[in-house]
Image 1 (spheres, each protein chain N blue to C red):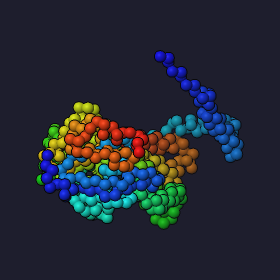
Image 2 (image 1 turned 180 degrees about the vertical axis):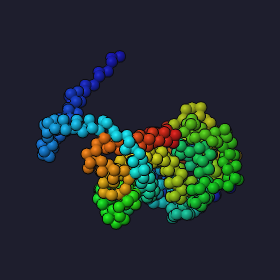
Image 3 (image 1 turned 60 degrees about the vertical axis):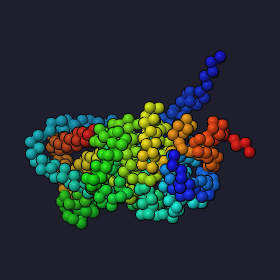
Amino acid sequence: MSTPEIPQRPWRQRYHVSAIAWTVTIVVLLILSSMATGANFGMFLANINQFTVLLVQMSHPAWAYLSVIIQPLYETIQMAILGTTIGAAFAIPFSLLAASNLVGNKVLRNLIRLFLDLVRTLPDLLLAAIFVAVFGIGSTAGVITLAIFSFGMVSKLFYEVIETIDMGPLEAMKSVGASKVTIIWYAVLPQILNQFVSYFLYTLEINVRASTVLGYLGAGGIGVYLQRSLDQFNYSATAVIILATLVVVMVIDGVSNHLRRVLL
Amino acid sequence: MQATATQTNPIISFKHVNKIYDNGTVGLKDINFDIPRGQFLVVVGLSGAGKSTLLRTINRMHEITSGEVLVDNESVSDYKGKALRHLRRHIGMIFQNFNLVKRATVEKNVLSGLVGYYPTWRCVLGLFTPHDRKRAFQALDRVSLTKKLFSRADELSGGQQQRVAIARALMQDPKIMLADEPIASLDPRTTKAVMDTLKRLNREDGITVIVNLHSVELAREYADRIVGLRSGELVYDEPIDQVTEAGLNQIYQTKPEA
């Protein structure tokens, strides 16, 4: 009995031709795009001391400022929670209709997806500007902006989750004579619930950060104070706002990790 | 065996059933046969011979291209919406991959067999009657899994999951039980437990059982009758006392001799 010959790897695989080619292509594209856009690494190095000056100032946070921003930070969190909840609630029916494994009707599915693409295309700053104009300066404009922004993002994340579920339980529910709603309730929701919660909290985290920027446009929350401190070159106050926001983001992250472990 | 008046009143009949998939593949070719009430029928054949398709034409999980499938002397082809759901709720089905909702409890999985009998809003709110909850417990008792009532389905072994799936089908109060390769992902010992359970339901409750199997040995052990499919055609159909080794081998020949 002779040992079978080990087949030779083709030379393309042996020398990792495609991996090397891709790396080279991406580096070349990066260099080309920096040249095309005028992003200049030399300028970055020449002005780096400006940046260190700023960093030095920011490294001495004015902790006294904390008492000023606690209230607006609280408002920011409320805005983010409200906006994310409203957006996610609307996202659930839309994501179910956009999932290719649940909706066979291609036309309906693509219409829904087109609508969702449209919503995602609208930049949150534009939305905030519009709603500030409509509802006036304040957190109402912020909540609505965040709701729409979350809706667009969460819908896409949700329907991509739905498309990865195990179809077996759906077949089983169909075979016992379940109606569509019952099938979704019994066979789809249990499979996606923990990822929904995880994406909801991820969106909440993004919204806390986004709402700091929205404050620039008068949409309420801590952004107003961020803008004020930057305008006054009061970088030690800016540092406090950033650190406080970091704490909020970290808390949300902790809750998210915990819930995911519990719900898994 | 009780084969008296059953021959004249089959529970399922296939009449010139053809199934051609959209891509032109022939799934079933002119299938004609009757299944009498209370029979334990085993369908054998190679992978892709059309066993799963044949099984799913009975509860309309697959549509047929032409011909007729009769269940209780009624053609199932025209059923829509509610009528279709009513047909399905009397036909239990178990699957190779068990198809339980893994994150839900065993109790919820068993109760889900009942949803065809409940209005949607009661299903959504989980409002099952105490009587039905008791039935769920009894169904689990029949597959010897009462201790697992509140366990999560994914904590159970493969054989236990398949028995939960059988309990779910039992909740439907089925006249017919379809089993699509129910033991393909199980080891020999749990295979026996699952096949024995199906046999018991067939003997004690008079449920007509139709099982797709790869294993000819198991088919010979449990079936009242064996039919064989090859490339979508019915090439073998014998009651168990007429089954011979040579006849079964003929099903698995890749090239028909004529």
